[in-house]
Image (cartoon, rainbow, N blue to C red; front, side):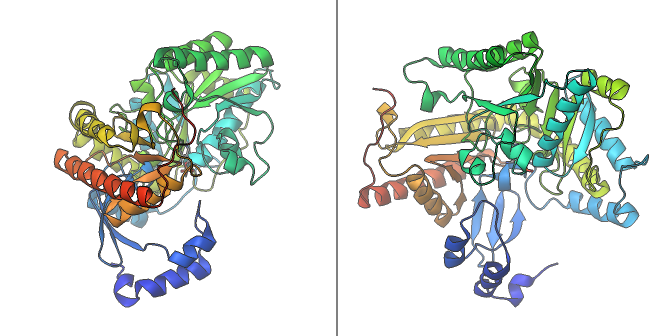
Length: 471
Ligand code: PMP
């Protein structure tokens, strides 16, 4: 057991961290001034810091700890696999039981035509793999120019050059010469923020039509694939209107564009089905998985492909010159298998679909009564609050986007609740094993935090109306 916290004070740990550790998605100068929170333990839906403070982790880490923290079953499997075969690769004609069994298991869970998986260690690597796979697929069919991948503004698909290019985050693109060539973006189905007077139904169809227009204007002989998250996560839990996915699916089929469903957040129960594709009746040609595949207990991801793609690559592709040292890592694969066993044994997905998901939806809706909340939306174990100084008009704050969100996030943490902010949206993605009583605690803490945040925002003179969205 690592009792580092007993040996060194938080302040010392923070100082070492500030000296030597570069944090992801962090303004290091600011963090070094305030000091990083040192998290030392997790149990169920709770985290504990080095000072003994307890937090209800409504984000499941980074959307990944689906079965909750502290599951000894997974630790035991890891220990056994490490003792037996800690590492071997799957290059050059070798394999091992954990990779074999996990690929078989994934084929049984995914839609019937998706039966083969390429393993890697993260969602970013899996999406880079997807870029390679779809381009290699069309090349193998004698269409090397059919190489453009369409994605969406405000999508998140990872942080490597390829996957961040697929993503539609402007702040990321400007820092690294992205997007890389032949990746283009269309608008997102963000009804609350971008629909104006259109109904959800009309708006969903309008945004799907933009995809069709883009494909037609560039030419089908150039478009390899379209990638999208069933529900956008990091973009702010953007739940598409019901009319969106059926149209997008029809368009991709009709124009011969491969559809990649990025299931990194939606997969493994978060939407109340095994995959977001099941919830929205999407029939993808490729699926990106990571996060909930191992509940974050080991880094593992994968790209799961349809029989059509697999057979073209096998028949015409020759060697696929792509792979990672840790593709199908035996410990990660064994732990992922155990995680899937726990999800099934405990009926976590049915629980989300039939019990805790609807319960969370009804309780979360209560937060829309708060004077600073413009919309409260939920799908399965994903939720968002749109903060607004004038909920009726869905106005944004006059202060720069994210100012109020950040203040609210910090107040949540002070109150023992981990919610994340995306601009002025507050988002949650709790562990799938959260109970009804724990959902009550989450809602109580969220309301309390909104109250305190509201007071703070009023006292700082920030309740000023900026742009109105629905006059
Ligand atoms: N796709 C989606 C939809 C994601 O949310 C993320 C991570 N938040 C990724 C891909 C990238 O995964 P990773 O951080 O494991 O590379």
